[in-house]
Amino acid sequence: MATALIVLAAGKGTRMKSDRPKVLHEVAGAPLLAHALMAGRQIAPARTVVVAGHGAEAVSHAARAVDRNARVVVQAEQLGTAHAVAQAAPALEGHEGDALVLYGDTPFIRPETLARMERARAEHDIVVLGFEPADPGRYGRLVMEGDRLDRIVEFKDAGPDERAIALCNSGVVAAPAALMFELIEAVGNDNAAGEYYLTDIVGLARARGLTATAVTCDAAETLGVNSRTDLAAAEAAFQARARAQMMDDGVTLTAPETVHFAFDTVIGPDTVIEPNVVFGPGVTVAGGARIRAFSHLEGTHLARGAVVGPYARLRPGTELAAGARVGNFVEVKNAGLGEAAKVNHLSYIGDAQLGAGTNVGAGTITCNYDGVSKHRTQVGRNAFIGSSTMLVAPVTLGDDAMTGSGSVITEDVEAGALALARARQVNKPGMARKLLEILKARKKKAAEGAD
Figure 1 (tube, helix red, strand yellow):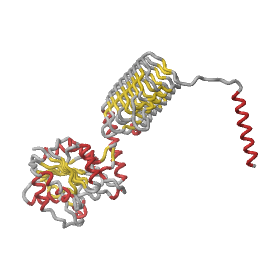
Figure 2: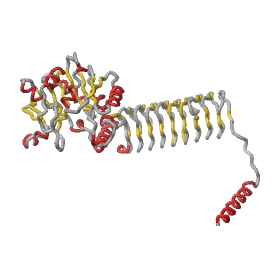
Figure 3: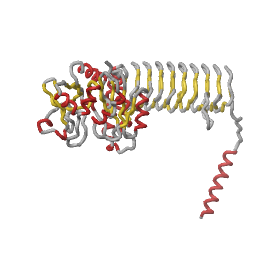
Figure 4: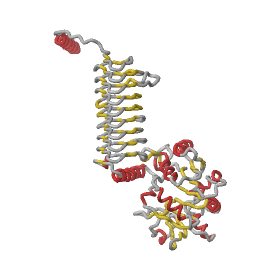
């Protein structure tokens, strides 16, 4: 039977010192909650329920951005993890399979780990995810008897012998949904915190003669985020993992520690990424591309052999065909560059399409906004746009067209035509010296008047 996913996301996160719900703070360009949902999505859940609290509307929006079928329920009072899971019961009415509980502030659980928990469920009624941190600190402890999990003890309620146990509780648990909710009904709050602990279902199950076990994972997978310091540590952990994976996949990072990836960055082999490059969400790069130093990309696709930067910014909707080049201090937005097209210097190309082989001179701007609406610029194949050309959209330039440097193009240019749109130059002999003398005299007079 398929598994239902329950993601706990009700905490405010007071240590974050933020009005934003804790699970909506971002790692690698995506909310913590999105990371948890994406991990859970790998098991193809029959249903997904997110338990929200503080900022429930914003949490709901973020959840449905990942899974549009996710049900969001509200835990009005935060009375503990068992109480939180209980809020999901009505949304899972009639579900006959398992339920898997994840946490919206724990973003790095691997799909492989969840798969191992599913396999363990075939032999045990309850499966808990455990880990062994370098410093067990205040984590709950898993008390094992061989391969059987006897009970989970919260740190506040643990004695010296239990606190000496190295195996800790991540909070992630899987069990038949009906059994989980039945056991939760029997959970009390007679403990040091006065909360209803989900962990108590293990002891209750064992008392009924049911079995429980623990599956272990690397401590890095269970990293939770409760503060800005934790958030920075989570970002660093994600980036370290992503950089290592990219290099394993055949991508060259000349200074790995300076490159930052988004949660969904895809880069093909034999791509070279120079120092201080930042990838926002939605970037795909085919093999053999080169991204030069200090460039920023988001919402962009680069075909094979494309070259970007240095100091380039590619914004959402940018498409570079094979061999296209975007150079230093160039910004491109919602625009496509055809095969081997070039925009090499100090230009802005927005809401435009450049044909294959077109060359755009330095300082060119597509004037795409009239103060109310955006308009497009269409440039054909093998056109040459002279430096400092203003292309006032909507405007179309045909194949092999050319513009003179400094032109302001407001009308369409037919294929093969040269467009010149600038005032005629007039030279006035000796006027520069005369003008300079007038200005100096004026300045001197003003200074004497001030005295």
